[in-house]
Amino acid sequence: MKILLTGGGTGGHLIPLLSVIAEIKKRDAQAEFLFVGPKSDFNDTLREAGIEVKIITAGKFRRYFSLQNFSDIFKVLMGIDQAFFYILKFKPDVIFSKGGFASVPAVFAASYTRIPILTHESDTVPGLANKLIGHFAKKIFISFPESRKYFPDKKIIVSGNPIREDILEGDKNRAQRFFGLREDLPIILVFGGSQGAQKINEALFDSLPKLLADFQVIHICGTKNVEEIEKKMDGLELANKKRYKVYPYLKDEMKDAFALSDFIISRAGANSLSEIIALDKPSLIIPLPSAANNHQYHNAEYFAEQNMILLSEEKDLDEGKLLKKLKEVQNRKDEITENLERYNDSLSGKRPAEVIAEGVLKMGKNNPLSRSNIRVIL
Image (cartoon, rainbow, N blue to C red; front, side, top):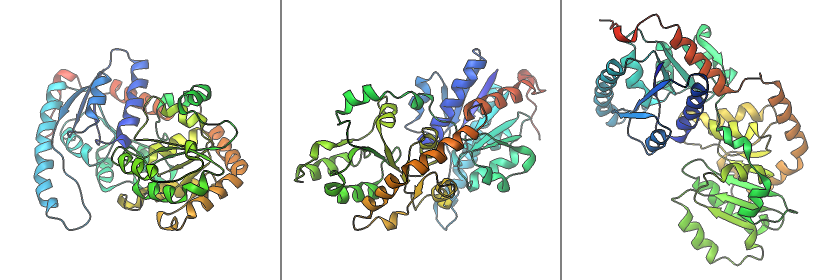
């Protein structure tokens, strides 16, 4: 079976995409893949996974006035032509879109053929691009039941959000050796997504002297922030400095950091939240206020209403309030953990990536068209 993939060039799109690809390969070792999307730092990761990548242009859909809205129209049109060429050449049985503006050219191009399109929405509130893509998709996988109201009900499959499989395989003993932290003090894992989070970094640093009296910290600050933080640490007199470990990013060690941590401070991207929830980790979630449609806040709100996380807005972290919020998470640890465990036990036996992979393969198998005779609707 031939499967054409498309999606945005961020970790938020890439991680679920790789999870779905892995599940498809388990079920069809002969499956062929082609990724069509704009240039991205993450394209090399796809190539390393054995996925052929074809670069096209794409534009954004902004809900405010910008001259770029006009120039991006031509980028989208050019991208549609480029994607159409690759579709005709590759002759896929099915197209899977991870969503976002980067998916639009390939999906629009595919809409002129009879190749079935499936898409996945990670967030509670879909963006404009995914609402458009939903019109062309045969099936729409959603992570949150609340997203139903944005799409035709007959198209919806509530799958959840695929996560990295290895994130569930962390080893505490291995983590202890790597991070070198004490076993008798709780550990906080702090991260802000693939680019880090400047405001969280600042709030953490302001609270650090008092925080390290009772906690240890593994801080993933982002590559663009690590130099500044290291300089600040060099000039800071701290009695418990060894309890603070800072890294620009973690790759293979991330699963062990999760396993070792008692509490988590994070943004509210769909991937980060899904991993935190799956691991039953009590957390303080601080949404990115500038996220499109405020989708990070809405993602976190869903779990906060069920007392599975503590939600705090960025503006409420001034004057050392981060420590106060974290203490609240610590005091509610048993309640939050119990709610997380109950939620995870209530889920169906199949993981999100399995549900999506089976849906993609079923749709491709039932495609009535021969790959050698793709019909174009004129």
